[in-house]
Image (cartoon, rainbow, N blue to C red):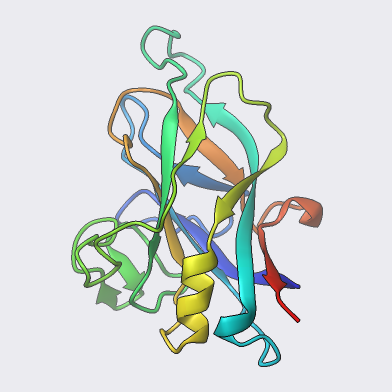
Length: 197
């Protein structure tokens, strides 16, 4: 079964909300702030209990790796980016969230969400997905979210996932996935869950 997106947003600057941006931004490139993104999906229907979940895969549409047009390749090279997912522990709103705020009047505990068990879990979800140089763009990238979906089904509040690069501060191109603001809905994120009979 397919779980559709509920909301998503990129986090880059303290006072700017990027909900209307057609991309989910991940990692820093020179002369710009760091970037992380949030994504949330609908809950699994009641007819698939946690014990029957065989696998759950999230698909994000990889658009391209971005650099400022005036940056030479030597300044902003295309380096491998090691994508990680973290379970988010606090509620947020895609039209209000920024790098310091989760809601218009409520801050994250630290910039970009604390990966410390407060805003998001301290340990990433199992598995790392590498966006490597010359990876075909305009294609879906698969992330294993089986553990996350099972935990949500077992009662953990579903506040979605944080997407970051393990080497997010290393100088290189920033990764751009399609957000739900992209006009082509066939490129929107989704989760595919395989439930045992």
